[in-house]
Every structure is written in structure tokens, then in C-alpha cells.
Image 1 (cartoon, helix red, strand yellow):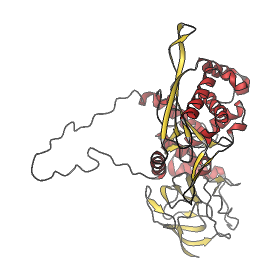
Image 2: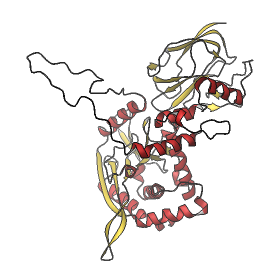
Image 3: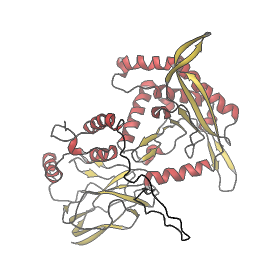
Image 4: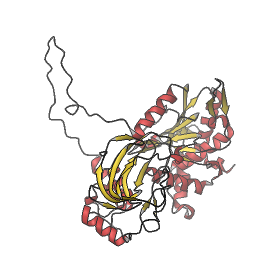
Length: 441
């Protein structure tokens, strides 16, 4: 029994640093083995770190918001007794629930050596209510922070009076209606007079007229990957307008179908199916350029589709992918898309979910954009952008009629794909959006 120092462990992602997001304990708290100490954010995931010791929290050695390197000391625990099992490096996954309701990070063991009784769920809820006033699980609190929701303002509907994920999402959706029409407050200082003199005038300090946003975590990883992709792969972009009226009709029918009653259906589902179908006809779209150690290179054709979906989340841009999407039927693909979107929104996307992608879809239409020239996700050779779908005048059989029109655009690695291949691929995607019945082929 002595004071122990807990060092930031290697969470198994090949990364060297992580940000301290939120401490779950304070000096003087009593902790047991596997009690969650802190939530950290790496470049790819949020991870809850459990304690390998039982004892009393001494000092928090790293403040929230600070980025620390792997192996650096982050907390001391006094009178600490280590778990009977030696903690193994944590895996790059969110904490999983243990049988007794506590959080166990994969690789740390289950804390079988701890002898003190865990609190029952009702007792833990009462403790949380007494200390913070609002009962909510850690993932729900994280979601609330990401969506800018104050938990105290949310009406709880959970069976024990706790705030649920649906409560937070519902509150955020209601608030967004008013937030979108609000007029930002004008700065108090409208103009600034800068004297003319021979001496250089110092720039105003950050905080007066500018805001400094640290580049770290997902944003840092995204920036590095995008720069590497943009200056390594020669990008070429192509696009075409599409009459997506029949796609919209199919989406409407699917929404009314009992087979899809419990699944969210959108035009993105048909777009995803179209991309999978088109890749099969032009396999180089899903290939990868591989630079070898001897200075040579090869094009690796992948006969499967790990379909990436670019997701704008509060943590930054994430690109999780659906593994072996070519093997899924339409309902299975819809469920996979829904799960992917929900997981990304809740901040639970794991590094494994983002690895091994073969082609990516970015749905810029949700932002009201018609087309774009997206940057290819590193390790892939193509990315497709789906623009907004809106009614426009369109010539049908010699007559101008109102039709639902969208633009399909894409960027491709010209080292891997020639102009005819990328043009054929985009044309194939467009043909499915124009006539989804071709999916039955």
C-alpha cells in the first residue's frame, strides 16, 4: 500500500499522445480497481481509462484540455493497491459495460481482485444526482457537450429519472430551430484606429478580435491526412447533373414499406447502393496506389467494397466505413448506414471503423451544396459527392417539367484511374439514381 502514479497508457492505436477531455474523479475521492478515472481523446477515438489501483485520489497531474504524451504521469493514487492482474495496454475501443454496470476498458481485466462491493445502479444514480444535480450516463453527457446542450435544461424521460440520449437529441433539435434564425450579437468594437508611426504596431492579442483554436485530436489527424492526400495523389474531378425523381419516389415507397418501418431511409441509401454497383463495373475505382520500399509502386485492386461515409461530427471529420458492403441487401445496407451515423454522432466511432476503406461518399447535399471537388480519403483512389436534391425545370420527352435534380461529382487519383474509367463510374452512379430499378440487375 503506497502512492502510485498512473501513466497515460498506450491505447493500442499506434498514436503517441492524447488529450485529457474530462476528469471523472477529484482529489480526495476514493476509487476502486476499474473505476473510470478520465476520458481521453486520441486522433481517432474517445476512450475512458479505468484505474488499475484502488485507493484515494491524490493529484491530477494533467489539466483538462491538455495534450499529453503516452507514458506521461497523469494522476497519483494514495494508499493504492494494484489489481491482481497486471493491466495490459488498452485497446482502441470505447469502454464496455461490465456485468455489474461499471466501465471496463478492454485489456485492463475485470478487477476480480477488488474486494469492496460495487454500488448498485440505483445507488450510483443517487450519488450522481447528489453531486451534479442531473442524472445521465457518461456517453449522454458527452453527447450533450458535443451538441451544446445544457443537461439541466433537458426534460429527463429515463425510468430512474435520468436524461437519455433521445432526450438530448430531441432538445438539440428543438433548440436548433431558434438557433438558426437568431441574429448574432455584433461586437462592441466596430472599428479600430491604428496609429501611423515608424515603430511597428504590435498585433492585438488573441482574444480581443481573434480566437485561437488549438489543432489537435481528430482535427490534427484530418489536416495531416488531407494535406498528404492532396499533395501526393493527383486529383481529377468530374461531375454530372442527374434527374433523381425516381430515386425520390423509391425512397418514399421504402419509407412506407413495413420492411423498412424501423429504419431511416434517405436518398443516401440509394446513392450508396449505386456506388457499390458502379465499383463492381469499374474495379479500379476501389483500388489503392501502393508505394513499395524498393522505390517501385503497384496498384492493388480490392475485390470488395468497404464503403466510407464522411461524417461531420462535433469532434471533426470522421470517415467510418461499412465493411464488405457489397454483401449487404438494401435493408441491411440501410441498417448499417443508420448505425454508422448514430455511432459517429455519439462520438463512439472506433479506429477500426475508420480503417481499411476502399471508397468514400460525402453527402454535401445536407448542407445545401450542389457539387464540390472533395479530397480523396488517404489510402483510397476515389471519393463521390452527392449534392442537394431540389426541384428544377428538366426536359423530359421534349417537354419542360419540374423534376428532382441533383449533381453527382467525384475526385479520383489519376495515377490509378484514367479519364474514361472515372467518367464511366460517375455515369453508372448517375444511371442508378435516374433509374433505381437497375439495382435489380
